[in-house]
Figure (spheres, helix red, strand yellow):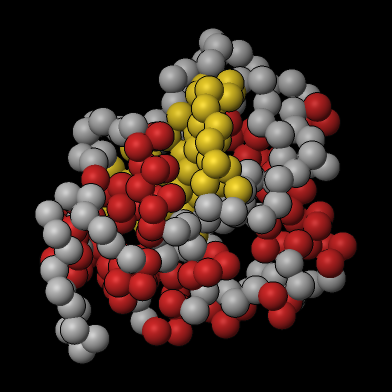
Length: 246
């Protein structure tokens, strides 16, 4: 399919959905017309580029009866692309209510709302065990950014509202929790990271693919081992100091 000619004044989300579904050339600027203009300026720093989102979906390789989870989903670009390019169900976990609303509205516009669920929740409490695949784009990295470097501040609190030492402590806690959640995944579950997640995965995940992507790399990990096995003590299950930051 050739992407349809578009005028600046006209935006057809159904045509966009068809183009993404058929893997026709689509720019991030065209895709992001799904969102209110104030949210679009956050794209360069915080949202997964569309070409990389499509590669993430391919690496996760979802089937129709599986659930894919994006931790720190933002406006849901990966979730939406996944729903358009697979028959799986896609969940997005996002702390900020305006971003959850924008992703939900975009899912309706693209006519994939029946397989997209956005959760306004904290990574500390969300259960990963129902997911067959998980995606993370350095979701805790904002906690190390200067307050004036994060374009997310207008849509909800996170970076810049507490001292840097407190933000780093919160980041380390979230990395530890992500490592603990990895142990809850079923064997065969896939995890894809872009710019890492800030720490080192525990031994229950095996690295099976690593490839250049954008300004960093995509890594594909697979859950291995007996699902009844227990994680090691918290002090050794992750290394927050070994990080891969954006």
